[in-house]
Image (cartoon, rainbow, N blue to C red; front, top):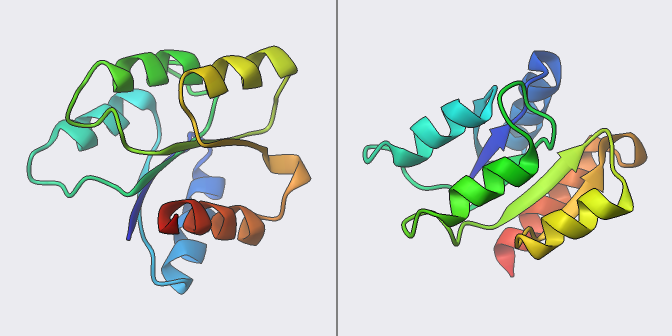
Length: 124
């Protein structure tokens, strides 16, 4: 199983990837949306089973990311979860309408629980 983690905070990204490794999950980490699409569009890379997306990235927000993802038939059906430090009902509603599987607030969840949730989504 491969999960593409799009997270701009390096310490958090490294921690997520290490915890995934401990659960025998291949985590691929990128710091922004552009790098995520470079990875997704590289024919040599295996497409991930799930995208773990931070809503606030330096180059785009989650809505723009989802708009771009859904425009590409090759990658548009990859499940996406949003894991962010901020959430309001409007943002969450907009993201759900764009087809994300779930929206988690980092501060309200343990990292291990977030990873377990992500794994459950890929197994369904």
